[in-house]
Image (cartoon, rainbow, N blue to C red; front, side, top):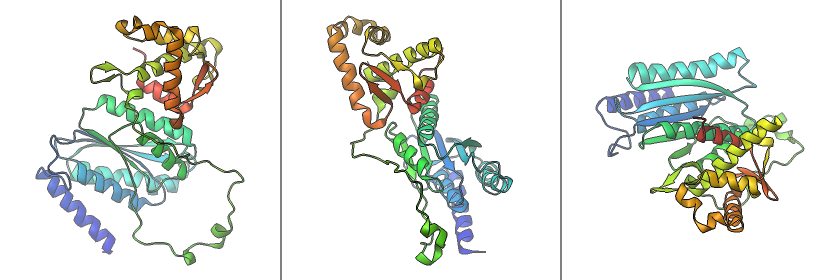
Length: 325
């Protein structure tokens, strides 16, 4: 048996023993124990390292009869039609996870596969925002998300960077290879490849903090005005999109004009509507402008004069946050 396979078997065996004895690998002192765990892992070529990452997270973070685990394997839509890829990388990994952690480990675990356009950062950001928002809404406080970067394209890595700013209990992780490639390991075609004739901007130097005020209705018993502003923009966009037969991310919402201001006021609690700063339109516009400026680095909205357009990521996040009753 190869040393890597031997190590994996020893690790799994140790993890299972610890699970059944009621202890965690690194968090044995966790109080209370983690109740819900979500792992999202793209399944690219580095199958062994993706498998190792899932094993490490589950072994470290779970307790039998305490933790409910969901694993989402992400497959690229440009590869999934290839039967060898699906069978070798996706189905095989899914079978392994369930056999190891459900059948042997006796964990409450599900493992599903989702097909996504893994080369579209904006779509991936929106999808991740929606998944995480739904997860945290339906999960107890003792819940965490782990997003794997090991076998993913750059677009997925950037999308993950976008998303971790929104939620305080999300960890992006990466499993390093056990060996380092040398210059001789690269073929000439890779060396000579000049890439696409377009520069992709990765990030600008903006400070980035978690954004609970935009995704949580309340903060210590008080309403989050950013959340309510987002709700007003989303509701008005839905109404205008239906009127104009447009997609939500194509609608310009006149949030700082009378129609938008009235929509914003309509979602405020009754006691706030009577507050002078919400009665006075000029003061209300200033507060809206301040909130939209503060969230610019996260690219949820595109501001044009007194109107705002939601980006695709904002649309998908809004669909998760503001479900129709």
